[in-house]
Length: 156
Image (cartoon, rainbow, N blue to C red; front, side, top):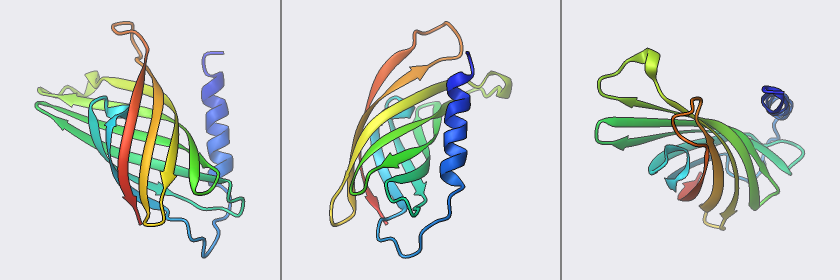
């Protein structure tokens, strides 16, 4: 049961990403945005890549971000799907690794997270995103906790 939801999520991701892309779809498939809260906890600058498919109701995406805080670098990596067209429900999951001075690769802390959110894209390709995620730490040093996210960016 421990890996049940992980295996369901991986099967869903493989099924969605293996579909053939649609040519000429007007929806943007790249975005850059600044996010407050979210997987990097305080803030992050993110790049997103997405694919478009014949079933225009599902658009899988991958995000990579970075957050620089004095002596700490946080790197969130996220995979998920956008559901619907212009206004999207987002379902995703991923992990955030953070690196502190001095760096010991065997002790890199990680936060695993699942996110539910909502995205609005206007006609000028600006995006506004908000959501809530459940952060899960692999050890018992900290409790698992919900965390809000708010982002503004540009699609292209």
